[in-house]
Length: 335
Length: 305
Image (cartoon, rainbow over all chains, first blue to last red; front, side, top):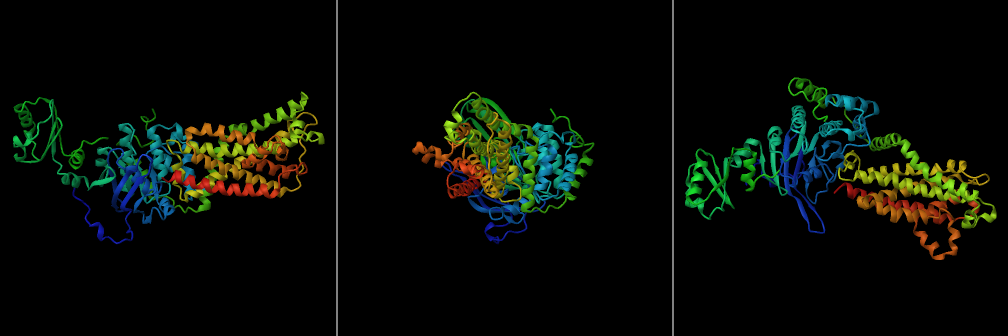
């Protein structure tokens, strides 16, 4: 795995810089009677102000735990983290003043109306009653919730609730906005609408940390992406860097009816073919990474036939985050 | 369904896009700069509680009034009417001409403290810690988590105070002729201290229970904790009357409610006898401190993983 961050970490001074988010070897282990669970196993992040940063990984990769630690609701068991220049464990109140958080679960105050959710959140952050009401009205208009403003929060649709949560996270002009799986469970149209909102916020210079398990969401929104799995960052960089680093070639996968015999790829001389960088046999599958996939699929069919294997299905994936993930982890991406 | 109707701007992908973009952009650039302080945030949280209480006023009121109303009706009206000797015999006070409603007022108030304080604190907590964890909304407010816990206790205590105060008018109005309570407050300060600490004690117990008990077992906790506390909380008789069952008299000293009812007897009906004042105050103040400490700690541990 190539580390893509420019600086060697050990050379850094211990004091936090003016980064929006910075972590050093951040860890979280949940103790339980059935053994400890290492949810986050040493994550280093350095996210400058104004960046739209994505943590991409399958469910259970440790993304939410990481966001939880950065937003002071999960206590780290190792390492350190600073948000907006403040230590998350030593100065949690200072951190909370400067962040907006949209959690994955719907944490709207169900006992209040849409407008009250915004008003009271504003007042929690010290705005006067009058200013809070004005601010709530503006947010309601901008986020298209005008005809729902007196509805109770538990009567909103999934998309409306998510919009209200984003609006609510913005009442106090946060330095950093955290969004944990903001479009999970939403229909495609609503998801694209939310993307538009996030793009506008980003264009205004809002620093955003987003977690997602949707590859296309990370591709569509983020300046930089960290691919996370099993509590660790596997690779980090812009989309182009990630693709280049993962050797993001086209991946041709052929699945046979029978298990792939040992040494098949070597016997067929696949590794010597121009453009091929990696060949993996995995049960009944043969996976070939190549920068020049022209005719490769046909060749794999022939190799199979020559060795008495029958093709069940075949697939060819163009370079994308998905193929990058495959190259990094050796596994299919599980959403 | 509403996901498909996109009101005012957001939805219409390209046409209104520019307008939406500028209105949202403006929200970021023109935002008022907040200056949160602890009192402002605490005050806003209390304002939120009162907004919710106000909205639920009818159901809150009914919940608060039903119990004393029925108690007063049965014990101060029905039983005296049918000539049951229950009141005087049970309380051991009838011979001196004291009505049962006089005995009942402090007891009923004690049980209201417990019911309202626990309901007012525990039930919202159970909701807020359930699978959506809406508690995270308040937990992200710019104050330490313990302040949020203290705010929860305060809100619960206010409900308990109001719930107990409702007992007075109810018992004064609902009784058979000649069966009204005779309350004689000579020390208003004592009454205030007892009522305030009884409220905070029950709210603290409610916070602690609401954070240590698995929500799925809450029903059982009410049966195992709340019911024995109220039934054995010296509601229907003063603590001193229990001397005939010595083991029970000692056992109920573990029940915080005993000190609430006895404290109220000391304040409302001092001539009828009560537990020593120092014991009452020590239990109420000390209990508030202990359960408050425990509750704040477990609350913090539940909120921050």
